[in-house]
Length: 315
Image (cartoon, rainbow, N blue to C red; front, side, top):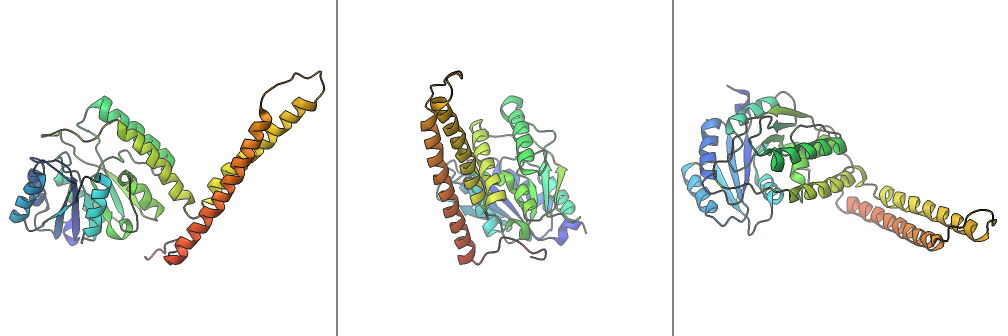
């Protein structure tokens, strides 16, 4: 018996306007997974092209298929979170609904997971997308994410991955955070592996991704860095910036006083440095007070929810 058949897993597919793709994909998944114990959760993210009806037809044909319908289009991360929250398997395998991910890679991902990993991330090494609009921005994003997070992967944007339920259900995702899940899992103490997976050209429809997503990724990356390093100690951020501004204000005040009362043989700057020093001082005090308030809120959060800022190895 192949290793993956010892695992009960859930395949989560967020879709938005993928009529013509999703039914074919479900049939391919059923063929690839054979008699394994699994479920297919298709999350319809407010589609308007008949995707929901196509999913319903597949659910009648295959008992493994479950459909979750969102009231409107919430985005891929929210749809993925809905699928994870409703998944019953011990392993969760997200994948795209456009048919570009290969269902034949699912057993391989699960077999790799069985080698002692908590996450196996797919790498679309031979990606079948345009270079300038898709692959080149993706290369830049992957390099940036790897540098900031310290978790080096070739392809953060590949949806096809395998996660152990115990590692992923403790993570709250929002925005475009789904692409950072492997880094979150490492910070939770998980072990991550990467594996080359197949990638196919899109047969029907157009990609929902655009260049604007790059800016969202950068913003979410800043958020990710803050939450990963300073969630339990936000005062380090606010008071740290405040301290720098306070020192800048002292320096500006010193230069302003010297400019006003210093010897005439030195050149006069004639700049509003005194106003700058006052401004820096006021902002510094404001940031330090914000840091103290954030620290208080974080401590109340952990106390009210009885949540510890750590995880035991056997959890």
